[in-house]
Image (cartoon, rainbow, N blue to C red; front, top):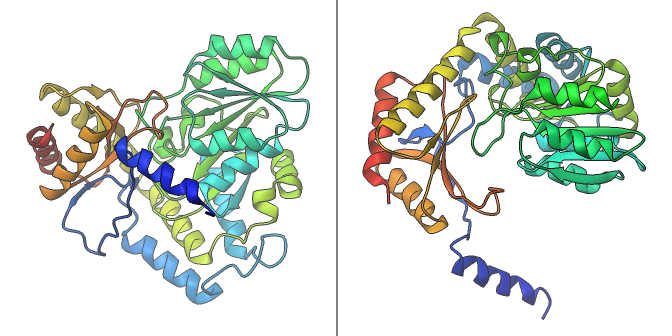
Length: 375
């Protein structure tokens, strides 16, 4: 039977406790939200939603085509200019998602004959970019510059190291200065996915590369998403103008994809401008993350110290993690639940996201509910 193997795989997932389901949420959820990636609390901010509405009214509901045909508007170029300036890079290129941005950067900058050195803890979008790239791939130990050095030492020719800036599972940060130093020893480029750093790390939320002193370097390319701290949708690649020009001409997820919807571009631009005016939001997100970690650890939970706004709490098993998250939800708290294959080390977790707009009382309530529902 066609696709008969799907039933076998579904049964295997069910037996392993790894079946995933969609849960539509209402517009006004009563749950305390520690699951979304809205780190700065901007997704529903009046200025951000008004930016989306104004852009939709001006440009329409969609971009109408790829960026190279009809999908580039003055709004897209305005967002690119301000995003590059904010993060300290020469140029930026906006795409329809952070996933598409990572595929674009990795595939376009690792041609045939090159070497890709990828951190074992990288996000799926970076992993898929490495799979699609024409260069040779080598996966190295997590957050280990020496492992990157050993990999680069085996190769002659073009090479690039690829790493998350803040890893999405445990919220730990990559040693970016050390990685950049290793890459420069061998003349390799560095691609950094700063999805979880933009808006949280660096001066006023300007990102991990800014915090590491790498913003604007001619051998560093950074990807970001507009769907986390900026509360919108889409992604972007930041780097030297010649690299961005190369992506315009070679990156398939840019060339053949419809441009980012104007409403998303308008919302992201409004959020970026708001963050410029209120840089304290970045520090507050980090403060809430530290408070969550301290209170959860005091309560006896196995919690990983956060380097940004992601707080990870270890669960005893995939089934235990699912049950724990469901019990939290029943008690009025929404938390993330990460299980294999989403976690590279096979350890299931509750994944909590700190938000700049959470109060101390809300943090205390969340910690209490997590402790009361632990399996």
